[in-house]
Image (cartoon, rainbow, N blue to C red; front, side, top):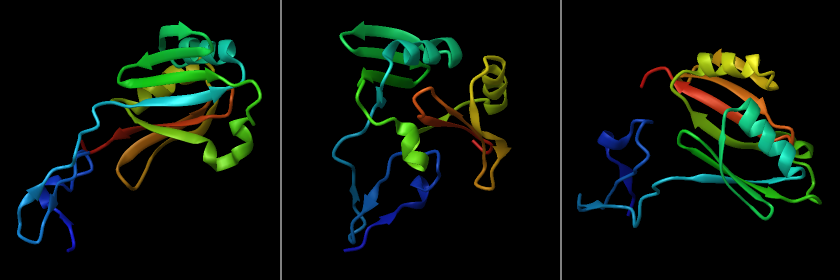
Amino acid sequence: MAATIHPLFQSRASIRITLFHATGSVRNPMADITSSSFVLAVRDLDASRRFYVEKLGFTETLSVDGWSFLERGACELRLGYCPDIVPIAQCDEHAWFASLQVTDAAALHAEYLAAAVPIWHPLADKPWGFREFGVVTPDGHKILFAEDLDP
C-alpha cells in the first residue's frame, strides 16, 4: 500500500505529514514533536558558553555539573563538557548541526558581523527560496540561519 502526501500538507511550512491509506482515510502520526534541543559536545565549556551568550545572543537557563543549557527564541542548546572528544572541526562537512529558521536573516547576519562571529557561509538568496548564512563556533560546529523568502 503506497502512502501519498495530501496536497494540503505539501507546503514546506508544514512539519506535520498526514498519510492517506488506500481507502482514503487519514492516519495521523503517533505523536507530534513539540520542540527540539540540540546537544553538543564541547571541549571547553566556559569558552563555548561565552561564545553562545556573548556572540550569538543566547541566554543561559541552567548550569549544572558539566552542562550548560542555553536558549534564544525557539532554539534550545545543551552544551556538554567532553574534554577528550575529537574536535568536530576535524569532521569537515559533518560539522553542521542545525538549520535555524529566522525572521530576518540580513539583520541577524549584521548583528553577528558586528559581534565578530566567524561566518563560514556568506549571506545569500538561494534558489530554494531562502536567504541563508552560516556561522562556525569555537568548537567547529556549523549553524545555518535561514529566512523563508516566501512564507
